[in-house]
Length: 130
Image (cartoon, rainbow, N blue to C red; front, side):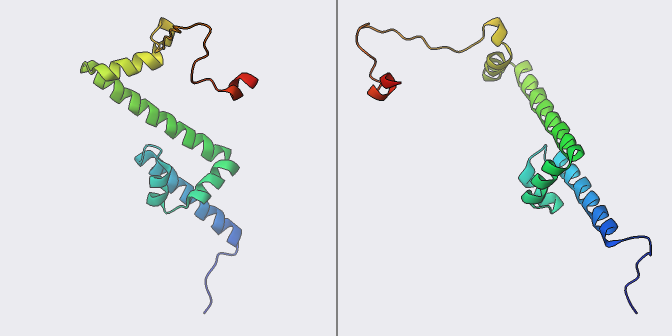
């Protein structure tokens, strides 16, 4: 007795269905891992090479992964806001340095040159040639 196959289902159809199921598993794994590709590939039993090939070849797959990346950023931002509400000073400073630039929350360095005619030691002769 031979292997049973439906007369209307080709090997190509079966391969496409398998790929579709693998992509779905990968999406679920990406959600669980908050977009960490290595971890998601391990969970879904998909090689990183295959994952990146799908990203390149399938615009819908890429859009779904981009959406998951946004969810991961939202999650991290919510944790940051939680720390800020607990009066965590480093978190507040980080937030203001990244989101408060328009309001002047930037880190800058001031340099004072004590001998205006002397070139700073960190400038090399190669820099002057440029």
